[in-house]
Amino acid sequence: MTTKFKPNANEKLIQLLMHIASADEPLTAHVLSEQTGMPSSSVYRYLVILKNWNLIEESPRQSCYSIGPAALQLLRNFQRFSPLSSGVHQVLQRLQQQTGEMAAYLVPVGFRALCMARIDSPHALRCAYEEGQSQPLVRGASAKVILAHLPESRILGTLYHFGITEPDAVEQWLKELAQIKEEGYAISTSEYDPGVSGVAAPVFSGNKIVGAVSIMAPEDRVQKRKHAIIFSVLQAARGLPPAA
Image (cartoon, rainbow, N blue to C red; front, side, top):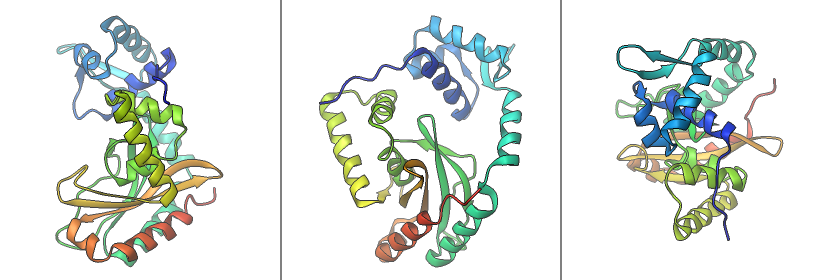
């Protein structure tokens, strides 16, 4: 039996920030309230805090909000100190050569999976996916394999965020995620982009899930070499994350 998830004030603040960061365009407070389910009064209160810390900016003409200059400090720190750069690209390069398909490394950020690195496929027909692009943690193999290994409270919070609140629906999701966790990998087709299949495996630091390594390719090419691709993805995941 599951319990209903209720985010606290700190989680709501971070949720609002990540919602703005993942949007394709600046958002108004009204739209933010509708999309997050937060009361307008709470949204405005959190927006003031985020603006004071320069984490977001407000367009004075349209009263829309986008990510602010403090994000540059976060990016600079990540680029200087993250152990990802060389090791991840080496593993992804090997995976791309083994499968012939685009290889990517994604990490959980809030309620989404963010692409940190990718190596393109040499095929003319290939998946278009960029570094910095993100997807909901409820769509696609990479996202689901991460979600499956998160603590149950965070799983419930993610489902709640995306409007999955009916008990039967929640139980069905928990069963699917439990199966993914047991099998050690996830496969999806047309969950994020039509006709595109993904195969993903979890990446751990100790016992903690830190990301997922995956390939993304047209469905027919994945089906033809599914077992070989799964083996290569699992092998790549065991080589990540690289040592700091």
